[in-house]
Every structure is written in structure tokens, then in C-alpha cells.
Length: 110
Picture 1 (cartoon, rainbow, N blue to C red):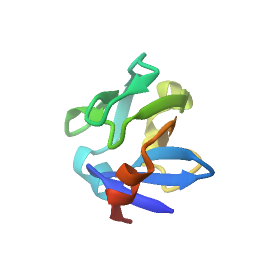
Picture 2 (cartoon, rainbow, N blue to C red):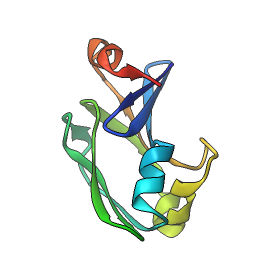
Picture 3 (cartoon, rainbow, N blue to C red):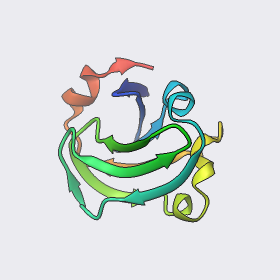
């Protein structure tokens, strides 16, 4: 099930929550040229999960949910333009577990 929060998509599958940019956010920031992930393994809602430098802005991406970071899309560090891809297998930022299900349910449907 896919939800939206803070201009991010959150896709839940088997207790893992994958966070990616919405097309609107991709359009707003322009082509991404640099991605730096935060080193934190545990994030609270609103904590930055990554820093993006794009053609139109520099942005700290806030976590839409609290949880434990179990994967980072490190391919983005070498090829940040993947964030502008329409392919869900390429354009995700991080994956979380240990997320409060009621907080996820409270997000808007995608």
C-alpha cells in the first residue's frame, strides 16, 4: 500500500517502508546532482534522512515516519539523477522498519 507524506511516497510491503520522492517534488527541485545520506540508523518523524542538491534548490529530506533505517539507496551517491527516474526500483531513498502502523495509516492515500 502506498501513502503520501511531506511530498514523499511511502510504500509498505511486508513491514518494510520504502521512501521515495513524489513526481511533484521531483519537478519542484529539478535535476538532482548530489545526494548525501544521514548516518543515523534510527530516525524520528521530521528528522533529515538525506540532503539533496538539485538544479533548483538544496533540500534536507525529512522522514515522513519514525523508524529504523535498514537500507539506503547508495547507488544515488554515484548517480543522483536516478532520483528523477520514473522507475520505482531506482528512485527510492531509504527503507524503514519498526514503523508505528497507525502513523503510516494516518498518511494520505497515494
